[in-house]
View (cartoon, protein in one colour):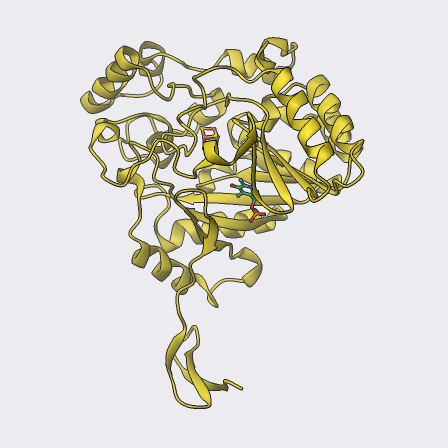
Length: 361
Ligand SMILES: *Cc1c(COP(=O)(O)O)cnc(C)c1O
Ligand code: SF4
């Protein structure tokens, strides 16, 4: 049984049901371009990451702007079919690092549990498009096997519940999972990774917040890519979590044509910080098939970070990371401040352009 089969009747469940899943339904909300229609037809004929948009995301789209940043994330174009020599089906080598199905143990002290294979909507740049929204469903048996592994491995201090989307589990399943994880004494931190705060903000009910807070320390890793995604309901969802003592960290994927400019990132990071959600990672897009058109050249990404550092509060600044293809782990890619070194000092350039020397020894 897929976790989605046990969804109960909540407001957020009604929102899921009201989601748009066909090009015909989509065309009633958005003026589609010929290219988008061709891409949707290709998807219908050949399969692939499903087309799904939730009411909350649809409401953010400017129906007549083909370059709309929300639309570009969720509505396919034929650019997805362009050949990409760097593309790999499993960009992060997760299949090789799965210790039991759906449990990735890449770093020594933390594991990634792919607790569902579904999302409320689907991002065209998804790293896990090989399994998300398609493929064999995740079952409770998978989760049982993962829990048994975690219980047997005392080095695991943190469990990252992801997917898919961790908050597509209904409260009952989630509670069972959290209780079971908390029964494992060596697990300290529980981190839930979700894009529901943007996709279906009504998912963050007072009941959900109580449930999470009953299993502290629980962190939520949200995923917002554009300031427009921080609608009033999304902001309220963040506030409810933070007010309950649940730290919200945000990851953003750097996407060409969506958020690859200083003004957009500044607005996004400042609004998140205002909501007390800490910008955590800014990801270079992973090399999943059909995502090359979203890639921002690395030099430009580093320049973006250099242009933000110092000019906006350090609280607003995430770490730019690349998840090294092949499952080698995330590495930060800083813009270098070094402008030269001699025997006993290094010359560093500050954010406003001036330089100074710092001793090497
Ligand atoms: C990203 C990731 C983590 C978490 O990494 P942090 O740097 O702790 O945020 C853990 N496991 C896997 C497999 C990951 O991809
Ligand atoms: S929410 Fe995350 S897992 Fe789901 S489609 Fe988007 S990027 Fe992929």
